[in-house]
Image (tube, rainbow, N blue to C red; front, top):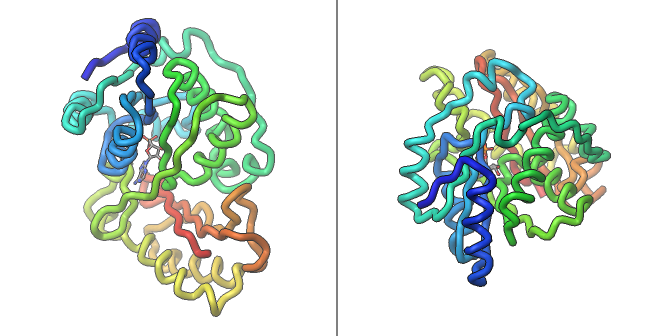
Length: 280
Ligand code: AMP
């Protein structure tokens, strides 16, 4: 695997790859890699001649200073994992390389900017959009892979690519979970052992909620899910929402649109966890 920290060197290497007629699959990450990330990468390797992974803890997408400071950074271990799956190119720039000066771009994602993560983490998706646009312009991949764990982020990226008419295909990938159901996340290592034991209750509750879809209305199911989660005092809920799967607008009646997703975001101690399941 070749590792690059500058845009110029990576661009040179990738132009050789491209000129030889090879396709590039891209997986942007913030590092502290786990099986969830590797799943995206294995798929990218299968579907492309060459895999480029970026590891960059993007400061402008954090709206919480402590979350940014405490975000795990383990580049050496990450490099080993990437080597082991056969990744060819790692791009691990520092913040000055990506932002030699502040990027003041502002994106309007319409209805997507009004709900859930956008409402609870002001500026978050604008920061995500800025870095993803920059990375796409640097890597110029044919395809890029994103996890449904961050369902709203995936919807935002799809809209960004459409708005800017970027020639990249976005591939959604299913959530990868621990054996006890907890959605894998780089932040999970920050849970205390007590919190780690409580965390699987999120997915357990979501699974029970799926079974109630034929007996409760969306509003009743939202309330039921919130009550189940609130019964665990360590859970501090940001939101429980049931929304359609395109613009992620709240559902009132099950037959309002084709797909319905149940979303949860909560704090467990100092760690913010998100998860979602498809209801219909
Ligand atoms: P991150 O490093 O958290 O920014 O994540 C990088 C990419 O991996 C994003 O597209 C995430 O949605 C995806 N990802 C993170 N955790 C998981 C997971 N448990 N299952 C599937 N994809 C994931």
